[in-house]
Image 1 (cartoon, rainbow, N blue to C red):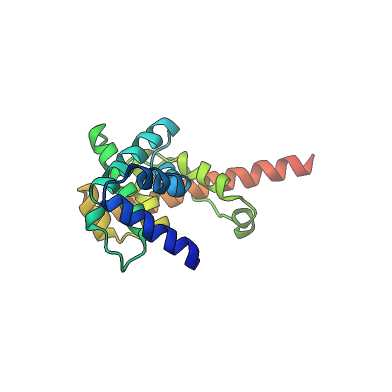
Image 2 (cartoon, one colour):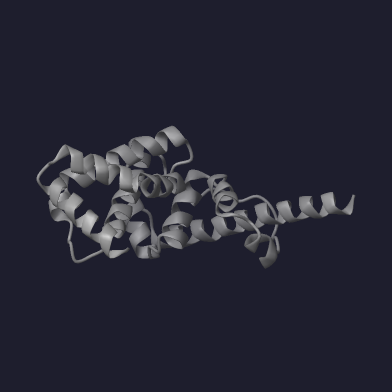
Length: 188
């Protein structure tokens, strides 16, 4: 972050500590896109993601006094948004257990993945079941350990590992299908 942005962020955070509505609004606008992108990784429906993000910013503003200014704000914000997304699942009584996997072992070409945009990859991740999507995002995108995932989702470490493995397998199958569809189009 540039020195100017860092100074602006520090000023906004100081204003938020004072419960200044203008500072809260500006902080919200500054991090809206980032927070929404985090929420959309965990919640498939855009309206639900917006609800999760609103809950997250409410927590940011009510818990701003717990923020450690010696650490990056973006990391703290990301953790809050992830926790709010997990709370969203709990409120909806989603069960975090394993699903059965159908399909075959699929070989995925590195090139296909490297040619896909972030939006296309996110679209594939969003096709996963909620259970697999949450574990995949927590482990692969946000760097949680299986122990942390198990604790947050109230599942066993083995279930976390199994769900991640199955999520990867489903993604391989989806990528394989995309590759075969692309090959069929090019062969015409």
